[in-house]
Length: 350
Image (cartoon, rainbow, N blue to C red; front, side, top):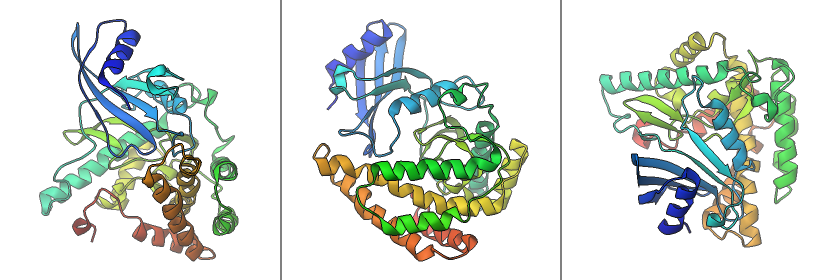
């Protein structure tokens, strides 16, 4: 549990100045990592920081916090809007040795009130929001991986045609390392998906991995910071559209993708997008199941770890089992109907 006094001392030591913590709050739900928004009074006026650390027993997503920090550090100062990363601390006393990342607080919100209101004005607004998101993804996907230092620590496919294979191999390796159960249907689904791996991509891009509603910081319907980079990877930009948290259902999906393609300068293969919709369901199993291990060991007794790491995982496994052997485009439609944006009210989803 983070307390005000130690947090104040910690920030003062790192910033080299007297920092008085005015208030701080922990964001919800914080199951994988604990994130605190901190407002301060300093010699130069008021300040704001985001203090992020692993939960007890480690994160759910099987990716080190330092990786997320390095991604944000590489992005800061480019055309991709991110909060300013300040430092990474591998094992500070304030968290009893859990790693810490600190970045500046960006003014805005991950919510857009009234976005799902009825009427033509609200519908037009939703399309504008989708276009704004498309433009920011295009800026990300256009980045030069080597020139911006990402090739030094990100697993980069040797060619665009190898994007799907590289991601497939990486996540199957992760699955073998972190799984708590045999998951026979997942193994069978992997063999089925391997038969359908895309063999083309417009380019090798830095992809966010999980993006869209609830994942970014907005102000006046503009994205001021793309957040949550722990699943970032180098690969086919179509993957980011496969897990874009309802962005393709905000307005006209084809119009949104065309707007993105105009901004990016290349096209998204729609059959690859279908594959990645199904592949993202598969990837969710090792991601969530990894978070079950600290629950089983007793390091983290929070019930959501059990719910996500086993119950939710079994749901994903059963869904994949239902799709094995179907044409990928048919399986993708099943996922599209099943996986509604968690941020969209039910009344607006129909």
